[in-house]
Amino acid sequence: MNHQLLTGRLTRLVAFDPERAAELSAKWNRDTEFSRNYDYPPVRPRNAKRMLARLTEQSAHSQLGAVQFHIATRDEGQVIGECELEMNQAAHRDAFVAIGIGEPAYWGRGFGTDALGLLLGFGFREWNLHRISLAVFAYNPRALRSYIKCGFRVEGHVRRLLARGGERHDSILMGILKDEWQKAD
Amino acid sequence: MILQLFEGNKIRFAAFDADKDAEVFSRWTHDPEYMRMLSPDPARPLAPFHIKKRFEEWEKEAGRDFYFFVIRTREEDRAIGYARFHWIEWNHGNTHFEMGIGEPDYRRKGYGSEALEMLMRYAFEELNLYRVTGHTMEYNTAAQQFLTGHGFELEVRRREAIYREGRYWDGLSYGLLAQDWQARQSAVGE
Image (cartoon, rainbow over all chains, first blue to last red; front, side, top):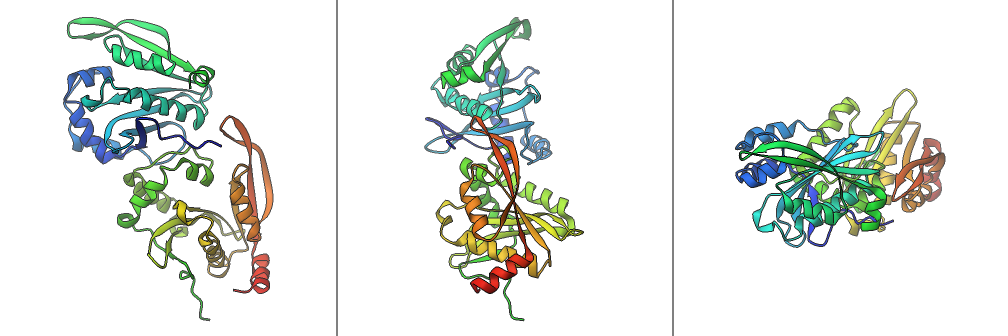
């Protein structure tokens, strides 16, 4: 049995540490580009202490539901981002992924793609998923290229959903099936 | 009646100390092979923060029946694994247990064997139980040999109960009766 799940070529998936997460998230969310790429709601400056209080609520229990990781560089172990797998429909074995590289020095260099590859492997081999979904914003072409490299296919456009910077942008829905992943891997 | 329940030859049983042990336990959870051999639950690395939280959750669930041992080497006082009785059925005199040697360099060297014997002594001579139940998975041949080597018998085969690496595996349950363990002590010696 192959147990290689958490170590890639450039990155490793490590445990999500709430104390570290609160500090880093507050720092990374100072960059509007990062925040607007990551999520739908209006972006706001974050307070590490309040974030920690919220993260502390989440259980340490292992069953399916949601799992978060921090992304560390493989060699130095520096935490550069975070990612998450969240069950969408357990009976149908479909989950959503979210990923963000928070350290600008690591954008556009393959680190996100490497970490996403690990997360997909985890989803298909440890959660035994049938498909994995994600949403990417049309104004984030770097992420879109990364997801296509990982084997995701565009499944739809939620037209002009996002209103940002005085313009309207699509949210692009993508998906990857288990057998597509197996061929790409 | 001079008898040491927690001091063995190579190892001792200690209480969990969040400040000392959370980091070590966290490191073990980053080893997918260890996690998959230990449990059918989806493998998941835990930060020291969550190790402490999980320990508190277990302690709260178990109430007065909380028996959790950190396995430490006597020579270097290094934490190498843990064991716990996670479900004691007092009315039946049965307990379920789990055990793992998290430090890879301390596997297959007799530390686990000594820990298992100490754990059984505790179950039968301090908790006064009638039997002990252990569980493992079909792909974990080392655990199967380990349990049968210590006198456990295969009792239950839950067919295709576990799905890992693209196929189904059986879940296995083993049992050891107090009288059989006592007989082994007399036969084999201390």
